[in-house]
Amino acid sequence: MKKRDVLKSAEPHYDKNEVLELELAIDTAITAHEGQKRRSGEEYVAHPLNVANTLIEWGMDIDTVIAGVLHDTVEDTELTLEKIESSFGHDVAFLVDGVTKVGQARAGMRDIDSYLPSTRDNLSKLLIAVGQDLRVIIIKLADRLHNLQTLEHMPRDKQLKIARESLEVFAPMADRLGMGRVRMQMEELAFSFLEPKEFRRLRKIMKDRLGKSHRKLAVVRKEFSEELTRQGITHEMDGRVKSIYSLKRKLEKTDDNIDDIYDLIALRIIVEDQETCYRVLGMLHSQYQPMLGRIKDYIAAPKPNGYQSLHTTVITPTKQVVEFQVRTRKMHEYAERGLAASFHYHEQKQAKDYKKKRGTSTLPAQLQWISQMQEVADKLSEGDEVAFDELKVDLFDQRIFVYSPKGDIYNLPQGALPLDFAYLVHSDIGKHAYSFRINGNIAPFDRKLHNGDVIEVVTRKLSLPRQAWMDLVTTVHARNKLRAQLKQLGIIETLTSASAIIRDKAVRKARKSIK
Ligand code: MN
Image (cartoon, rainbow, N blue to C red):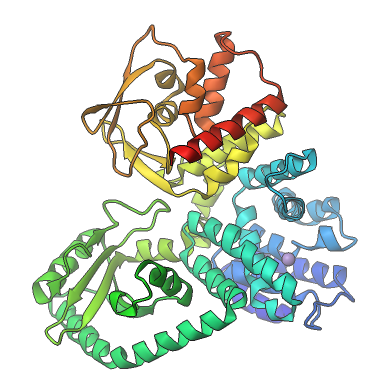
């Protein structure tokens, strides 16, 4: 990647002054990294330029792109944060600082279970950096993606470490942010380095399979596209091939029987609005025979990361099994780019709102976890006590959606308990919780919540929190609120950090044994 390539991809999307600023940043990076080489023998600066180019492709705002150009300078060169701030402003400097901190934190986090103060300190840095601005993580994802793309030049042990870390931390992070395409790219690359033989075997299986069905599929695609046109429905249709890594995961579930996998290839239909999505679904079901149990309405009930689409698998008259995915352009954008789509240069206003209010109020329901994380980051930066090791769990666990009786949606980690819900709704509701009704039935305090549960919290003014509740909450949010209330009521003494950690550890163990 060269300076002129980056400028060329930037020109159509940013105004003249922004492109000039980008050019200045590139020149600054070239000077700063002068003489440094990557393992491939390339000039080092090719790496940050690649990262910046990816950020342009993702449609990020200019500050993020510039921070991408400069992301390794503070760590690896003479350039200082002060210099960056005076040349490129506070936002760029803040982002570069965040990326640098995340890098340092990851390096110190090899043993996430150890309670050494340095680990703790690093984790705090990480969370503060992330919590204050999600664009830091988006830059970090672009950085990691390029490192994976150039992993072949690394020694084997480094390859394994980076690939594993990508699968365990970065791909789930991308998924959590709804960045489906990045997640897939990372998984594919990481898997190909972790298990090269298995990767090649599956790729061959896939190729053989697809060869057989490609032509038949083209017939179905043409036939249905023509039908849509006849009905006056403006649409785009393309085929998406399942990734090798998700094939592997699927095969593990189906006892290695590839015949049980119907979505090796799916036809994706993009239409103008939500109403048309349902109309197209109806057309599919009247033209072909739908397979029962394989119709999924992710529009009415989005996936926890915000993914929306209608999925259905149908059988054609020629006995071809085909999965269709129907969505609007906007849903498609989100499925591919996720949260990054909110920073799109076309949505500058939204991005500005985000920066001003730190976005939590403008984030969709499925991304509530972000505001919870930011809350924790605030506490950390103020030096407050938090159950820090729980954060990893909150962040990477699967999420569920539950509802209040009024139909408001709340997003919680899997394994959450009724009190977690109560505290999420309001700390006073948690405080005075007396009993719970889930889907209309009285439920005990230790009933695990499931996706789609409707939860009613019965409160009584005189009912107050008890010490034992500490074992009946699982989220950081609920735990912190409850602990504060218990302290206030004089029910527990202020816990020292050591005993807080021991107790959290014990609770976690107890919870595991319940699962
Ligand atoms: Mn880098």
